[in-house]
Length: 351
Length: 223
Image: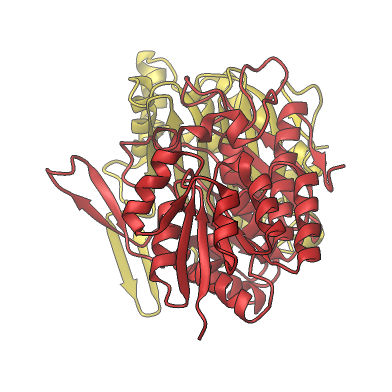
């Protein structure tokens, strides 16, 4: 079997090291190149993974003509340029969420991907979690009747102490857009980071699209941020399902025993499914580590996701989460911002 | 005194105390769930009658509205709620709203999410969950995972929360102490009014398909 040649573009995102590990682990992948616009970070990765680092993206593609795919784990604002450049160089692309923060960018990339005959996959890792798959299977088989209402949360710590760009509007959102009139904060915080996983799961499980979104943001938990760190979102789907997302960075980093959660509580006419995806953990307390920690032992979703992407390439099919899925989740995120700004429910599709 | 008994439940009273002493800083965002199967034991099923109970957004979630208002020490500015329309209801036979999700915005910038339901399958235990996040930390009150007693019988298993003193007893005792000794009421008439106002705003919002409703309310909601 021919191995697929892969490159990882940017270690800016906190998930990059996990993707690098997976690229090394996968037997059908040859991890040949790393690019990063932060040279120190790139060189460190080169040493850690024993994979050649390129300072110039142009050189990376020029010197690796037989590259099959790239994984992009850059700052959100750089997704558009990096995906575009990669597609123009005829490789398949697996890109971190959110896909883009502008719908015209997403549409352009979807067109480019079609014209080039190259797949774009989105890192909606939750679609690869075994408990999520089991829940979706139960819903699909009608085991809880017809879906009625879904409460979801994607809580987290704020990643800014590990990767500060998460709270810099230019890098996390690609622009400085005031959150709402009279508010000193800008778009680009927890709504950008944490709406899309739940939004994607809601679309995937309901098999429907959002048509109205309402959102509230509170005063920040962390007073020193330029972006929002909490929000609550209500969504009405076309098929009548009502849903909510809590996308808040509401877990205190450095103190909380785990990073956060992805929980879905699905109410159907014939039953209920309660999904607490990251409950599979061991409680560990030790004098050396200084606090109580939850050590995760659940499914290696990053591994399964990247492997599925390689299988999509070799069997010439769409990945499980497509560029269109990425676009639709971003649209819900953008509608939430619009609602926060206007104080009113927002109808989709956005124009 | 209106019987907002949640204020007498030890875990909720302790959470209020922790917020009051600054354990989590200024409260910013909270979540509260209150859910069970339909209370089939209600006399002639009056819970199921919209005009008698107001449904979950009034009868059930009012505990959490009152508690959140008590914890945030703030008044509500805006409420937005969704509830399944009649044709999507889980319990078709009743007229009351049987499931609802609510966003609450307080005046000083706190926000909260409330989920209330009678739509869980028969046999599902009455369950509650609360988390409050502040500028200095977070607290969780999870009645499922903290219940000290597990009871298993053929084909059934449940965790039971057991209280050192019955919260309903504490509530009546408190009222008696108010009457006899003049101890200040823990729940004033104004508190009860405000909680009801949030409840009616949530119901109004849900009946209007999720339109945000500003407080104070200017009109009656249940005709």
